[in-house]
Image 1 (cartoon, helix red, strand yellow):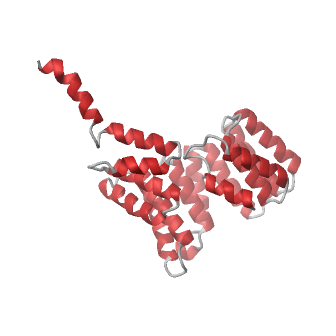
Image 2 (cartoon, rainbow, N blue to C red):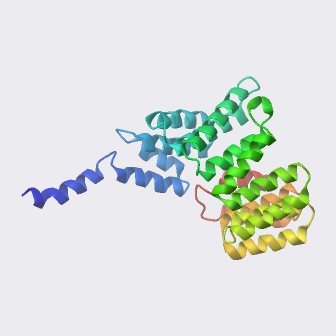
Image 3 (cartoon, helix red, strand yellow):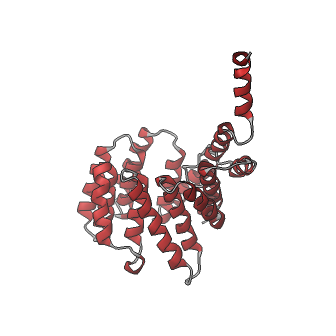
Length: 281
């Protein structure tokens, strides 16, 4: 009798609120950029674990509600303080709060951003996303907030040990900042050679070439990226953003953004709201 009804009981358990099935559904909604729908499923869970709170935080982050994102991600990290991903997303949320805060509160949020990025890397020294975000912080932030080119350079070497292509991109950023454009280009081309199937490496090269006024070569890099990832929505956005940033091919940029807004995008792609803002410009 027990064996006979066990499959039924397991099915009912899977369908119960709070079961992994609900979290999977919420994650699928998040990935398809239905953040409201994902939040409805998550808030309906009678019991929430760290994974649920992290996903709640990521949904709020994507909606631009960074205060609620921080609140949820702090609860996720409190539930599992050894989780590198939780620390990374909490750092990102604090980073957005810093960007949108006033002069008195922004430094505190920025310091928390750095602390959680550093914590994420400490928890998982092979978390390339965390290392890249920490590199950006060191690269952009002033010394009194814990940034600095020396820290960025040291981290770039560590990134290269885990992901040679990402390490080359980081080295290129530092070289370009120091106006060593030849070394920057060489590093970006090494990144393309190290990861020829990664569209983003070709976008990095194209953007650099456009900043240097080498438009024809930039177009060749964009064309190569299209061959690597045909019809990829992110390429439409990145190419349009590069044109607008550099004041070139504005009509083509508008067309690319209109195509992007009609595309099926995921949570990993730039938000539609950002594309709409670019289009309005």
